[in-house]
Figure 1 (tube, helix red, strand yellow):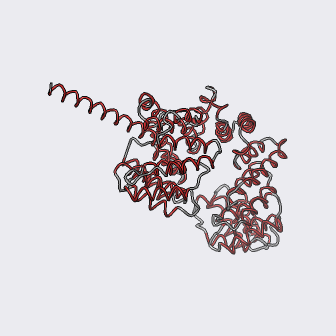
Figure 2 (tube, one colour):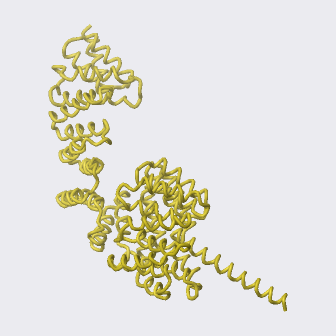
Length: 526
């Protein structure tokens, strides 16, 4: 009997151990944002286990199934975790004061050796909208007085991130969480997010890579790596990372949409279109209208303008107006610009995009608009937008921005404005040769089409001293400069100078007609 009793006890303990391990697996899936996997593991266990039930409710919240989550949490109304879960639903229902009242009561149930009510109450605020993150931090700190725990530090870091200027404290909290083996991977992922938000993509990449190395099963850093590699313009690597993310994810509709989004960002437009069309065909477009955004953007990039316009119009018809981005109007405008009859509509779309743009630095937006009007060969309007780029005094402004602004004025035959721009460019960037070449171009077009007065000579001559005259990339410009200087010399009866420039022309192109004619004329003079 003793042996049988011992065996029965051992089997009972093994069952409890396996049961607990399965709950832990479900919790891990939830932390990895694999909500469907978490549900499959936790649903069979939730009837008798309050913790399994709590994380099952959280998984439903992660899937935005608020009503289902509410029903689940109410199965254990006296359990502090599920009680905090109900408060999360109240936050989702915009019942913030009611949720905070419930959480205050939950936190008050903490005892000297039981810090969990403080953690669950603080988490409910941290991972919802409408609560007071300062209160969450206080509760985390109070819980940490009883027991240092990686999850507590992680939650506290996330709460600090919700506060203005809380980044430093958030980083410190994540560093504390990193000291616990169970939270090392996610802590590095969170630190990477902080660097990413600060636009320090190199540091973000270090942390995301470390996170993936610490736990290869964690899909979160792979998605983050894809975004970060996109930011540093390593599009092929971005695509590789999002594919690894998909391998480790639930391959849910949300995961597939994330995949298609990164395909777009990685400039793999045909595959982004293909993936999104598959999802739209399943009816997902009605639930997630932003899918039409990716379709419209990608089809514009592949020059499928009619379908791009169709999908952008569908997007605007279905999307919540509060969720429209500045870039949505900008893309709509660029698509409309491809039809010469819709220029006015395009201009209206661009103005709407500018109006809702919230970025401090408007230079990138104005560049996009300048580029759009340039492509449409509306050079005067393009010049206006490039001028707005320069007026921002953005740290991102480059010599090329002055060049494009001047070029648009040049192609619009606004020669005085073009000359002013290239003069300013030469003053700001005196070692940049192109400003002098283009002052020569502008002056030739405006003041010396017949090569009579040599008004452009000083600019072409200066440019020639600044460039390598054997550079194949400069051949076209060199021919223009030498042609001008040769013709001016010929018209001024400067025979040796004419021969010198004509010879240089022939070195560049032995069949150059101008050089041949000038040489023939000089020979005839003999």
